[in-house]
Amino acid sequence: MGKKLTFAPLVAATYFMVAGGPYGLEELVREAGYGGGIAILLITPLFWSLPSALVVGELASALPEEGGYYVWVRRALGPFWGFQEAWLSLCASVFDMAIYPTLFVLYLGRLWPAAASDNAAVAVGVGVVILCAAMNLRGSRAVGRASEWLVLALLGPFVALCALAWLGPGPAPAATGGRNDLVAGLLVAMWNFMGWDNASTVAGEVERPQRTYPLAVFATLVLVVLTYLLPIVAASRSGLPAETWTTGAWVDAGRVLGGRPLAVAVVVGGMVCGLGMMDALVMSYSRLPLVMAQEGYLPRALARQLPGSGAPWVAIVVLSLLWSLALGLGFERLIELDVILYGLALLLQFGALVALRVREPGLPRPFRVPGGLPVATLLGAGPAALLCLALVRERQACAGQVHAVVLGVSLTLLGPLLYAAATWYRRRASG
Image 1: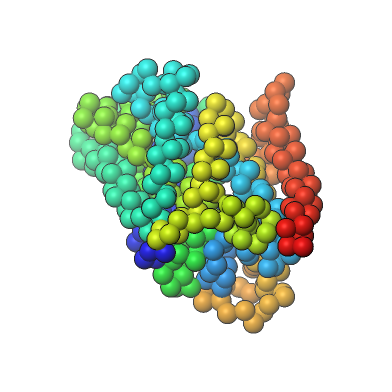
Image 2: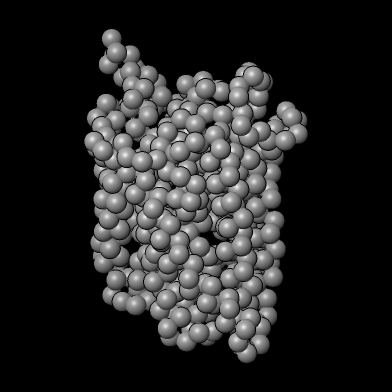
């Protein structure tokens, strides 16, 4: 295996696993307006992101092993729940990973409209999946270094947008407007603020993980909040009505504030966003089948790694095929399914934090969530409440359709059956 991930590449990769810049916030502005969107962006990190970041900070430093959150839950709650954690995360990845090629295509369509047509969009999306899979075959270090450059390319247009909004004359600010659907806006914000645990799956490939993980997670949290808030505040000065914001509206804001050159730069940034997030998350998700195959729950072929880079090439190829199958789903439905499945997996991680505090109080924890067991126990209350709110909102919004909740629950209930099959396979293979 090559050199390990250091602090800066880990921050860059984690940034793409969580955020990928302000792209994806457009629906938040439409649903909640500028003022409501800014308020949601201030509140959501406190009740959704910060608890997750604290859990990752403690458990990643205490158990810095390849497989990350799967290893935490398995050790704390047993192999059954560890398998459910991995199953829910991989299910979420099918819908999550279809979002980023979709985002790439939506922005490419601003420069080349033909690319956004149905058949072309799927073809371009598959191309993005193949490209990111190929980039990941070079190993985690290469992905981290690429993420550093992609972050700079991604955020450059927004630095210019913010500067022009505040330093230039600019038009009068638009009314807050929007649909005043704060819960729908909250759902969008939850998706934009989730994924803090994703970098944990490559812990075996990080230099000094006990120290690097907590620092990287909290540095990324500050970076995410700033790169969400400042562009939204700047966009509120563009004069664009909030209710007209849809995916791609950052291009319109760039055109108003900086003309065609800035609009084109924002389009390119949107493509970089989709590519960078896909690239970083291929690295994260591919380590789950690698570790599970090494433990015998999945076919041994999934544990095959390339010499030199250590990339689990079979797992990357198999997952890339699965991710390509979800490319035809709509953007909003992908977000709903992703949030539901990811949220359930996240609750198991909070359970693991508490269980390890009780069962292994002497476990070395270079970083510890302050406040003792009571705070650790209550840490999951905010994310659980937001998840329940999202589930209620989805049921109300999808009358007459197949609910994302129904599909999410069905996939969740399939987990125990697959665990039974995987356990049988493991015993048969080892016997």
